[in-house]
Length: 290
Image (cartoon, rainbow, N blue to C red; front, side):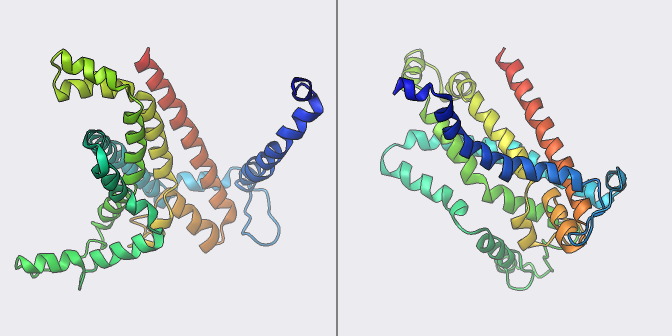
């Protein structure tokens, strides 16, 4: 067996399928996307090279900057609202033990199992200004005014609530797994020393969860940037372009407006932002660990 695995032909035959899939399904589309970003390709016909024209237009495009701002707002919401709550819930679930722990884990994860289309239309009914749940709830308290949370001025905040709620289960599950991997002996030792729950959390749980936090924060930023399906089904980027996110604006330009080259330029910027964010987060967390 050792002789077999030291054979270069055998090694290549094992590595080749995965390498081929990577080249064809990942690397080649990225290279093509970069190329089309320098063209005026519409998705049909011939692509003409126009240099940096798409990127110059992108720099002057107010909708793009609004989409980027919305993506950053969502990333902030994930990091400073969703993740702290997810971590606290994960810690509390770990203390429950027994059947209750499994039941509550399932309950919190249910939104992530439901189809995105169902989630979007469910919240459309909740936000409906005529017969939605929020409207009916306010009617009970005697409020007779018009409430259109998906209207101008409030739509982006309504969408952020849906996205933060919908992604809560994944964040909680990752933190829950991280908490489960902490040695219980450390908590027992802290309890013997008289440490309070707050002290235990900040002195033991939080420091040992740093690798998990790094992964979750990185995924949150990438998820915020590539947010598309829920927004597309919930608001379509409207009213106007108020709720456009980078991925939804990319889709609109490439497939609705037939500006395939312009859409690819957005995707290149998207990849660059993801790479910069990942490198920056790795550096920040390494410095903190040091």
